[in-house]
Length: 245
Ligand SMILES: [Zn+2]
Image 1 (cartoon, rainbow, N blue to C red):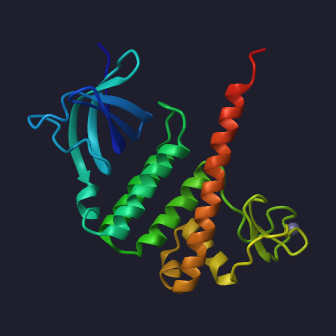
Image 2 (cartoon, rainbow, N blue to C red):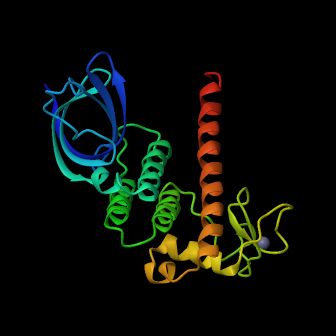
């Protein structure tokens, strides 16, 4: 009988059979874990609403042959309650959970920095101290950086020149006039400065930004994230298709 304890954030749940659920969690020590929560869809479930998306829980799991089984769950912080009544914050939080799930592909590979970023992001969203889209963009940029995909912002992604003119997703971020590919976006300097502030966690600068620069920043960050998620998943499929040698 092999039991372990950990704490984690519920990323998503799927129905399993009549009364069970498969719960996907990002945990502090174990990384991404998929566990079975038995009887959780019955009204008499001892887990109640503790294993719902957004909830930060303390867990005990029993190692199973394919999926581990959740044997205990205690709420540490129910972030979902704070987000449920505020649509922009709820959608931003949902995007964070989905991104964490897609960015962290391997199960049971420790991802402490990603866990801390997700908990920090949900806490900041729930306490309402900063605009939801700024919190979301900060989370996207920092989780991409932890995954090894930080965009170049202050020097050219291609030649390292320190005067940047445009933003080119495929090149890896900001580029100089000479390296600029056709069709690259040309954001305002303030937009690139906002992205830098969000990546560094400089909230004084980020909170002072103007709405049009926030809108431009959100568009670029969303496109950059989407490209890396699809590219990452595509390359994984490519690896799987390679014939065994
Ligand atoms: Zn260049």
